[in-house]
Length: 523
Image 1 (cartoon, rainbow, N blue to C red):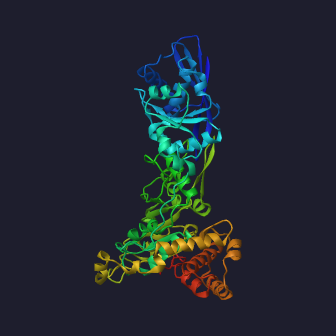
Image 2 (tube, rainbow, N blue to C red):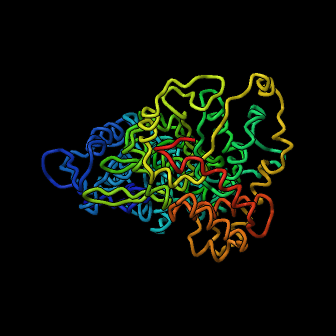
Image 3 (cartoon, helix red, strand yellow):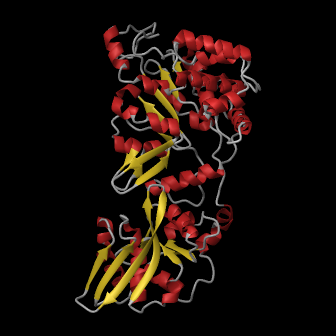
């Protein structure tokens, strides 16, 4: 007898439909899996047998062939345990075939028949809705996540016996878990709370780092990449960790995409709502290329994609391998990372705000008036040669941080004037983003505008254009750097609630291009 059950396989950010076919035929007892299964699926033979036996069902005493169609698509993961078990029950006559029609199933089985959660459920749920599945069957631990997809009936259970009992009389109502999340499922979204107007940079931020705080506000408003250079202990890491706090809340589409991404990566905790906070990822400089960018035979997202919609913080930037940093150039420019393998090519979103921090030299004290630098000019040039010109060219904001004077250390323990600085508040940054998104029909941030869009929607005054041309000629900036200079000037004008970009905005944007000349003469 032949039985079928719908499921899906994760490929990149998508879940591709898979049909699980089970055929029972006379012959020696055994279970054979075909259809390019990985090791985890091959091992499901023993899990399914034990789960059926310990749940009180008969194991098939005939030859069993399980086909995962399409046969040319590589499948991986234990999520096929549940559809294989249900199809076996139908093929052996222990479950009515009509109860399995139109169902999409995913879940891992324990040897005792318990249903265990698996990754990528949100993506599979979206695919189930596309297939117009009658219901989506998942473990109870994944039910809340699956219920985030609007208009999809979710059936959940704690073990195989309980699930079969629910399926036998037919599906007449949604599971209790989905009823609990009905409001969320109807909208498919859960927005983050709007930031308080008084929310600004953390009170521990040093008062003396006004330029760095302004650079942080510009970065948050326009989505510009930021490089902070300064001696040890001047507050680079502390300032970088404040950036997610002043970023505007996630939109509904961003929250859904981020939740789906984390579900595929397996980093999503038990969830009843969409991810509400923007991510902050800080990989160590010893991270491999696969860990930072993503990889594997069946690719999974890396730190770059897991920071999508948030902040990727690279501390000790010059300690990262130069070849690894250069691999970030194209994804940072396009906001999408493409990973190609022999059998597939998939894309992971990576629209991040890059924040990097480094010391000015190997000893860390170059330019510090109170500490003597022990590095030679050649050592400093070699130090900065770890960063390629094209990589630095893609960083809009380059800011030098000065050491904190002893007289100002006490202010780090008290409330700072950043809370009274209106230009640094989260509400002002949120309003600036609203303006820039309304200004162009595609709703892009200033950092995402093309040259033509910048000229059309930038509202740049003639005096600002002349100042910009003089700066580009004098500093010999590349086309990319010159356009990024204008984008930063546009963001500064938005923070000041100015409709047009003036000469003063271009001049201020130029203050954040400190390291265009490295390696070579260092400021």
